[in-house]
Length: 298
Length: 246
Image (cartoon, rainbow over all chains, first blue to last red; front, side, top):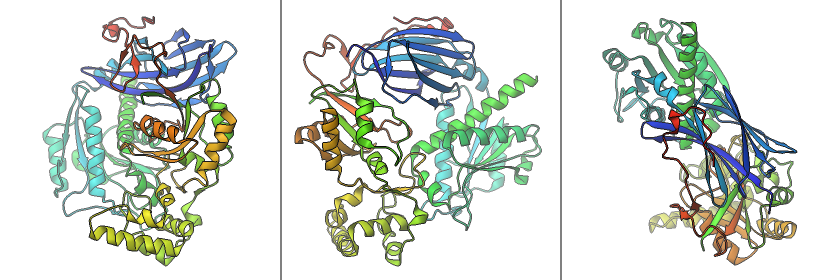
């Protein structure tokens, strides 16, 4: 086995204390000589003389920094084009072993600046006696909205922003109490989680509602919808204004319905804990796109 | 026995694929004498056209009634999945399994249903139990997995196992070409190198750790893998774009 065989590539976000990184790991049978080419938003690594045992394709990442990784095989080796959303410092290290790992670390400092001093109020819909929709098997909306809210809070925790949950347990809470918390904390954004319910079990997909009184909130809703769909691969039920959110004045506010709980498939998907992380990542990606656009317009 | 796992990323395997040919192609140049090829049971079943859309099933009254009783996180919680289980095992075995499950509940023991109705029913993946684009399907357990394992051994020369693994450290070996390979795979696959999401690594080569691996002088990480983390503590983020590869 003199040729390095590329067997796998994966990526993950690591939340080191105050220094989160996106890590891309290339696994191979033996080390290869990497040749690196850098462009502002793209890093290309050529594994010289290597052969791909893994399937060569474009892998969607969308972790807030890395967009996708394109793997292709050439006569001179295997190339990995890593597309990032914004320029980011990077470093390559090696971890000998079986498989041998070539690790590319990307700094996520940019997100630190983008999220600095932002205040989020996250609202898990329903609660207590108000169970919300019920899935065809047994899942209750009040429980899954709680999981969605805590997943988003967990993902925001390492960033320098403040997050508040409107409810932290299984109890009823009026809409006014939820909105009051957002107003009291002077939230930069209010995100309410719900799931859609229909008597027609074939209805499925993701929808995002927005505060029609908040400027550009429609854009935010569209970006959020697109990014959630990219992550969880569901169909779109579109965006629409939510008149209830008008009570928040001009505060950007969203009601996110990532899935339809009355649909057999989507209720089943809610049993997988990674779905909640993907929804949270989709929302964060939507926010990044929105703030980037705001910056550009300014 | 200490061993290493080498997951291999594949394309999205469909019913058009031949699992034996895929195992041969993806492990070529990676697998060596003494290694074991492990394949996830769900992709074996998919290549055997055992991924079924629930709308094609039309569950009967018995399936609609019985699906209320198993654990809701289990694989027979929907009427179509229960209907497929009835078709696989037969009504009598299913009813005997139900009677055994009731008895088990009375004495506080679990798993009696599968013991009587058939172990293969435990390998059914209900709706949304498999990764995209098969999340709409119910995936039955693989048909004659021993034959598949033998064919892979014949095609590659390496021992093969068909395994069902989950993230709660349960490893079920459905078929193996030798008892030793089953024992090794049970230990090696405990951390689920197949992945439970969109990792796309249904083929894993298990390599046995030997004294002459050449890695004995390196440190070993908490999973027992030889490891030598290099320069990770450097303040590299202060040097934008600097290539510090070794």
